[in-house]
Image (cartoon, rainbow, N blue to C red; front, top):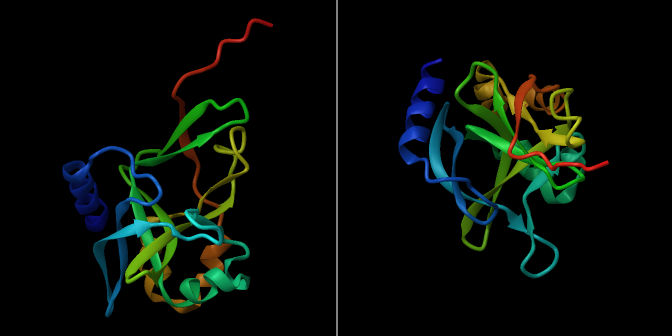
Length: 178
């Protein structure tokens, strides 16, 4: 609970707007036996020049060569106020936690081009996100944070969890004539 309050305070102070792929974001990673915050670039280099891999499917990350070692040994947490998804009509929806100031997204990181970079793990959308999109970030509960980062034995279980329900807000709604 103290970690959540401290992060909420830090996010309020450092808030500079939305973070998009290729930018630095604050993440939490393991240092010895505790969680430590640091800035890290979002996105692994893609297979095509100039493209980034920004997320990976939690269900298959341990089977994919690109992500396997990172998920096994370099897990991280991306704290955020919320995230966005767009529906098929290109309408933007924002998602935030119910009664919690910070969402904790599961991720992993690796070294590329002399710097550490992270990706966000996604899972099948729960009932609060499914009407808009079929995927969503893998959201962790505050009591799961240390297990995700520091306990290799908890990885498989947490990769397959269903995230809590979130509050959705339409940024705008397209008017329909018919």
